[in-house]
Length: 147
Image (cartoon, rainbow, N blue to C red; front, side):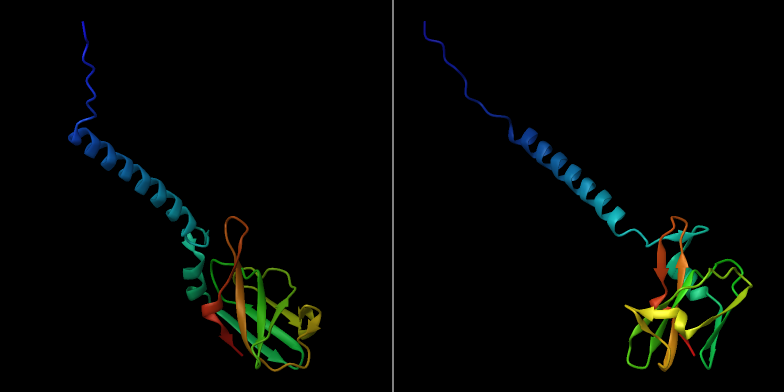
């Protein structure tokens, strides 16, 4: 008695269905991963920080070596500021956060970049920095305040 062994593979229909299912699973995994990676930079009170930067109402004036800051915003605190001089150099200022509706005054010597003080520099603009709900800082690069 010779027994004949059948060497049939899976049918083309089942193979196609399996390939489509695997492709859908792979695309779904990549979509979830990419959506987390590309997610917005942060939020505060459920408002994206880039939108909060556009709505920020900030008045900054420099007189001598004093920088006067008025946060006329009603919702967002100003965490800190970054000064930009006429050559494009940036100077981060150490300061206490300024609550909505408050004002503060700091000096140019409070602002430095790797030990280089902003004193004596011609400051042309101020970049506001906000803090999100998750304590991440967000520079409002596109919303510089001219001084």
